[in-house]
Image (cartoon, rainbow, N blue to C red; front, side, top):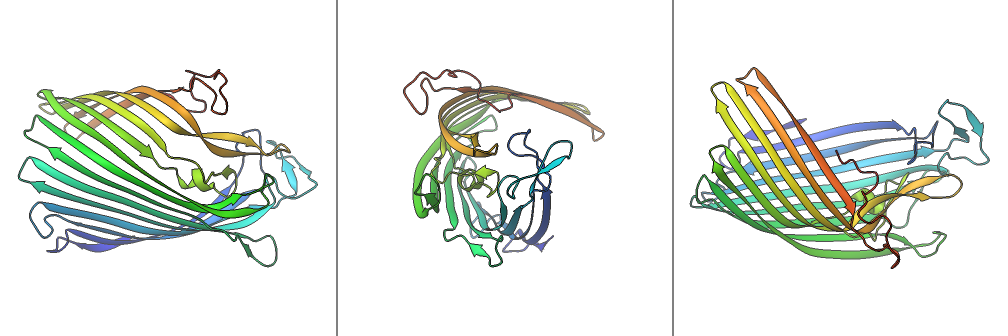
Length: 372
């Protein structure tokens, strides 16, 4: 629920919120569909207070501020202690040791802070400066509940992400506008890293990454109702929590995984017209994305017929695609529309990522990705 105040001298909107959720999930299959579980499950709960604040014309005319923040405290318990192996028919047979995937009864305690700040400052009518900052901090501690006495891992998993952006927008007329922007990416990661091939000894390791992105975008009305949009961005995608730390069950994270970097080019044409009570909107666009250090999800063989997912940086990937959409409306009575997207994601590595040998999958589609 949310509660707050609106339309005050010092705040257009101030909201406090609180969300509680409870989760119970039966895990029916592993990372491969032929792997079936009968009793494996997880449960958890989360508490999330939140804050929203916005004010137009704060302190001076033309200065608009918006702030959001939330704290998510959640606990997830993974339970995998059954001594039976199941098939799709529900038949089971006794195993030599407990655990359908791995003998596990553990709790992951997660603490996650998120915040965004957006400041717009309009100078006269044709200039606008925008500053945006996104903050995310995360900490996870794992506790084994198999023994009578709880045993917490000695090394917690932590990350801090900061993305700051500054943009300038020129709006000389209603027919066209131009924006240029820059972004600063900062990533800090800390957690356990195995020192032996058997992964029976760990040390705490940390790493930092800082990068700068940039880009430009513009729009232009070719004819009344017909608008063209063109944008370019040198962008970075920071790894997700799951890609770095896994889910403490079927997904194995990699603390050393690097962010994706890409050169993105987009071009769109849109048409919007109203004829009496009839309205028509159509849009089409093309996409070009050249990605390096592409983050790919693979399947790892853990031996004994058991598998888990893992994440790697896969060299270079080239994406080409297009989108089309259309919508028709009749007054306030009818609105109907649809869209179609095709993304052709291809392997762009001429040689293998692990050697200088020829990559036999060069120019082939990347696996396990929808393209329509």
